Length: 395
Image (tube, rainbow, N blue to C red; front, side, top):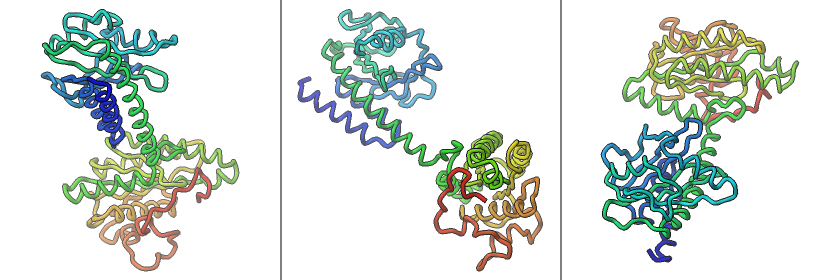
């Protein structure tokens, strides 16, 4: 391949990764771009998981052999089967050298380019009908991240030294693309995460709840919302300082997360200030209420604060038709308000006090706010209110 063609291949690979919107799209673009650039028939991108001692395949593209999936869930190889992963990808360049690609063939290593014989990789080439491969280390933030692997079929020209040099360049481009993808993913994660507690934030709840209610309307899936208000935060802030108040919020967040884990697939979130919630999709209303009970017990045992006021609303309870996320939020919020006003040690559950349930009536009332209501319910507001920072400004 001429220099101009190789330069163009590098540009195409970089553009493909830059246009990706998800990690999977980025992985696929990297493998496809490298496969085309090196005139290969197959390519894979793998990550070195040090903590698990394995090389895990992220994506396979091109002419896949039997059993090879595009995005495999379980394709991983112990590092002891591939000694060059730990030796070449780390030790051989950590002392000041540069990582470099090498070539292996189904007949054994190409002596001019292979750092060492890897019988597992050679056996894999034979088993899958491939004649040769070039393996390029991917280095990210100064550490070995994984490898780029491109193969050709039996009978095709064997990769040479120039191909290995070019694969090293391609691996550098892939590393830059992966770094950009990781930065974007981190930015997306932060956009939906509460910085103090590490739980989901209000934006994440809004999106997940809209999707959940759509599932409820289409399939009848049970959707439940537990809204919590940490008692005593203002007193803690006023008497012990906001740092202690923040610690109370963090500890309650940990308790909420622990309880949420009792309900598979449940989202644990901080709505802002001293307000938190659990969003459950699938478990029954009674299961959610039992977890809310446990949450109240555990919150009361915290050394800070004064327990929690907890309200529950579930589409499985007699609360009327739930056609919008807004209505379910109003119901859970009204139940939480009733629990707060009564200093209830247990959760208040919408719809469980008969036909004229006061929580349902409060949530669905029109016009001016009912007497004694401290604020408009979240669901009535056209836009979500901005989260309050830390414990400051909380009631």
